[in-house]
Every structure is written in structure tokens, then in C-alpha cells.
Length: 261
Image 1 (tube, one colour):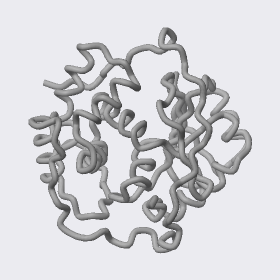
Image 2 (cartoon, helix red, strand yellow; image 1 turned 180 degrees about the horizontal axis):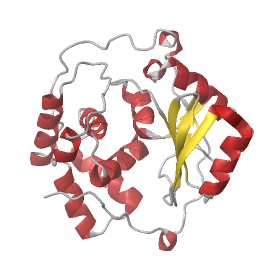
Image 3 (cartoon, one colour; image 1 turned 90 degrees about the horizontal axis):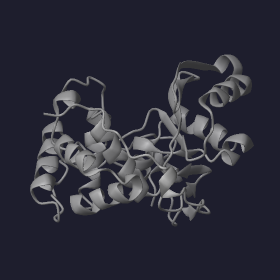
């Protein structure tokens, strides 16, 4: 079962528009990040749209496409070497190209193409190592209720081939909460998981990486988006065709940018 009710109404409508766009489909864009993880786990609401492609799409081409396609509806306020960031009809979105091919075939449900949980897990560990937002820890803690840290890190290593130094940094980052506690962005948690519980889960996982640090959420899931409660899938999502792997020689190792002490 995939939790489409975790996507707020407006982002859901925009995702339908984006995912059925022929050009974006051919460019290989998928839903990634916390939105993809929430589809798998149903633990929190997703209010923005994170799109990813493994293809070498120039960020300038992304910006031009969005502005030509959506006109005054879109406001692209940031462009980097990896992608663009902006608002579409007032909903925040990111479009990034990532030089790492996914290890598993992506999925599709209700027109929405999204990452396999194992690939989403790898990207989430990368996010914790590099930015450490509060929502990243909420996502990772929920993953760790289903998958031991040892397996989580194996997915990360298969995906990114980090150096020994990068792995050491990543392990420290898993329990470095200073940046997250300075992050005032609200996390709309559906299962009542508290921030203190999240930190306990992370600490237990690091202490016992082969075990699942079970810590029961205090209450049942709240209803979520009422317009989408009837869209839960009762059948497995369709797996999309996998894409050819990028030769490892062409893939750079991740550089961790978050300072942890």
C-alpha cells in the first residue's frame, strides 16, 4: 500500500500535471526526497515537490522549460550546477540532476513516478550528511523502524561509493542534531512521533546498527489529505523499466559539506 494521502491537495494536483508531461517523462524526472519516503511509509505530510533525474539535463534547460511551459505560474528563484528551485502555483519545488544512477527500478502509482524505498533511503542518508534538516531525521528515524542501520548504510555505500573519510563523517552526522534543532521549519508528522523520540531512535540505531530500534509512535495516523484518502493503493505499484548504469569511473564520490563535531 502506498500512502498518496500524505501529499497535500495542491502538490498532488501539480504532480499529476508534471508527471503526465511528455517532456519531463522523457527527461527521466521522478519524485524523490521526503515526498517519496512518505509515499512508502505514510509518516508525515508532504507539502513541496522534489524531482530528480539521473540524466545530464542542464539546469538552464530546466529553467527555460518550466518558464515556457508554466509562464507566470512559475517563479524560479535559484539555479545551481545541479538544478533549480522555485515555486509553482505557490508550491515549492526542486528539480535536480544527480550523477548517480539508482540501484533499483523506480515505481509508478496514480501517474506519480517515484523512487524505490532503498534508493530513497540512500539519498536521505546523503541529505543527513550534507544538510541535516529536522525533517531529514524524522524520515530516517521512520526508515530505521523498518530497516536496521547496517542495511541503510549498505544502500548508501552501494549508491554513492563514499570514501572512508566520508563514511566516518556520515556516521557522526547521524547523531549530530545541532543543525536540525536550529531548523524552525514545521514537520507535519502524522503518527505523533516527537523530536525526542527521533533522537532516541537515531542514538539506538548507531549503538546497535544490526538491530531495529523499535520505539512505538504515540498515536494512530491522522487522516491526512481528505481528498486523497480514497487513493491508497491496494496493489503493488508498477515498477518502471530500469535505466542503464553509469560507469563507476564517471561517478564522483559525494563530498560531505555539513560540519559535525
